[in-house]
Image (cartoon, rainbow, N blue to C red; front, side, top):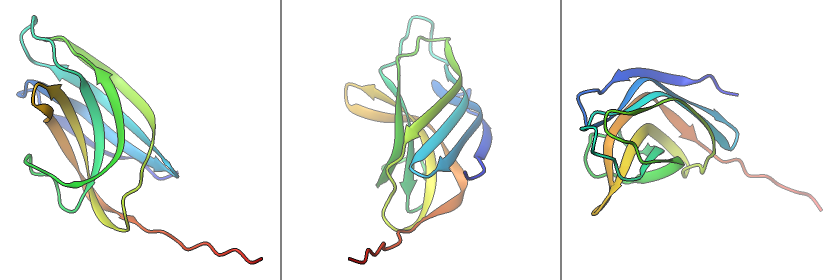
Amino acid sequence: MNAPVQLSIDSSNKELSLNGVCQYTINNDQMIVDVEEIASNRNSGNTSGTLTLEVWALEQPYAGDNFCGYQLATQTLGELKGQHLFRDLHYVLSMKPPVEGRWYLVMMLRERDCNGWVVRDYINFPYTVKAEYKLALSLF
């Protein structure tokens, strides 16, 4: 198993935010994701749309705009009421690897609204990962 890659962040100035330690570990075809806290800083009567936690592989660090890449893992979280939070999230997720290459990983908190999926918060991890595939030969 690989050592976890983690970052500690505070995005509490956003309506929906990833806070505290966020990390992932890749173990074969699984991604283990841990998030200390997801908070809704909206008014108490304002419930979010459906939320997902997603990890993507991108060609460059995510800058908060449109993106194109490979979704490695995702977890549906449901809705979150204003002034509430999810704490100590831990998921073991199936991972879909990207094509060969070097990739920047980003964890995104996305919300479904009337226009589709919107990134509400994100964290870029500081190291690239390398995806490579080995050719397996069988002799008959």
